[in-house]
Structure formats: structure tokens, C-alpha cells
Length: 116
Length: 117
Image (cartoon, rainbow over all chains, first blue to last red; front, side):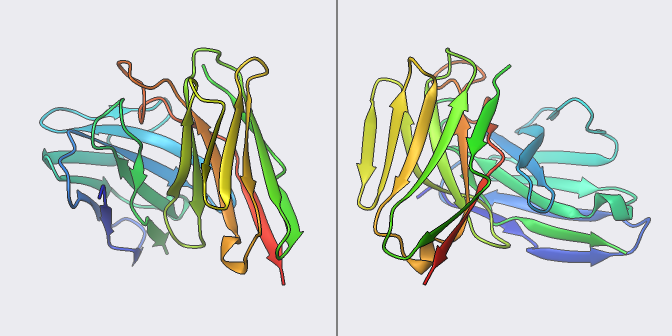
């Protein structure tokens, strides 16, 4: 149980375009999902908390207009990287738990974004 | 806020030997300590976790120990196998409270475990 699916697993886009990444909880409902960013050989950095039916909460230093988050249903959150630039190239990972604050956090398999 | 230190950054052991990864945390209020295994190109996978009301937890070849007084916890892998090669992350948070659990997870910087055949 507690499977988190992420799509696509990798994407290459041109500078200036936008890219959407999907995160789904397959066998549970998640009112909250989390988006992380990971640079090569580094730890995970929390970008934002996605809340179903309300605005996302962004961590300090993360541009909300750059990284648009939509959590339209209890099983789907999307992250859109707008006007992508090469420095946005990274590994983006989403996560969710069955019971926020009371159950373990499970991660998707990540999306490798390369901006050319 | 919470700060988690993890050591070593790289650990190379012979197949069959044991591996130990250590983490320290700064916030004495933290009460939940998960360990994640991340293989190349994949997301982290939860392998074991421990809460502060327990000193040790074991699952087959994997065990985690916690010393609340010293604020450190360790991952022990016995009889290592090639498939154990990966990056391991420790984390700490405050479970069961508003803003706890997933919200409050602070990760260590990771340990690259290499199993030598």
C-alpha cells in the first residue's frame, strides 16, 4: 500500500517552455503532497507543500510563480515549471502520506528535468 | 529548526560484512526517525523507521538504534549484499503533531554505500 506514482520519469524541454509533472497517490487519498528538488549527489530539498483545494505553501526562496502547484483532487498534484531555464534542470520528487503528520512519507520515483 | 548530520558520506564494505551509518539531530522534540534508500534515478524508498519510545527496531538484515539522550540514531545493515548498494538518507521529524510527520522531515545529506564483491 501507499504507492505514489510520478509522471513523466524524465523530460527534456527547451529553454523558455513550461513543463508539467504529475504526482498521484494510487491506493490512498492525500490531502497533502510534498514536492522536493534534488541536485546530483545532494540531499532532498523541500520546495512546497501542496494542499488539496487550497493554495500551496512554498518554502523560503522558492518562487511560487516559477513553480506552479495545483492539487485539484485527493489523488493528484501537479507541478508546472514555467519558462524553464537550464538552471531548473534537476530531479523533482513528490511525496505523500496516508495520514499527514501520523504516518510515514512515501516518495514517487522522481522526474528528471533537463532544460536545453 | 532541526538539523540532521549524517556520516559517513561514502562507505565501502566487503560483501557479507556489516555497514553502519550514523546520524545526529539537534531538536530534542523530534520523535520520528525514518531511513530511506535511494537507488540511482529513483525516488527514496522507506526501509525502516523508529519512534522515540523505542530504542531499537529490526527488520531482517536491517536495524535502527536510537539514543535519545545523545540525540543520535544509526542504521545497521548486516550480511551486506550487492543490491544494498545505494544512497541512504536519515531524517528526523515530530510525529503526531500539527505540522509533524511528513511536514517536518529534515534529511541528512546522505551516505553512498558501496558493496564490494
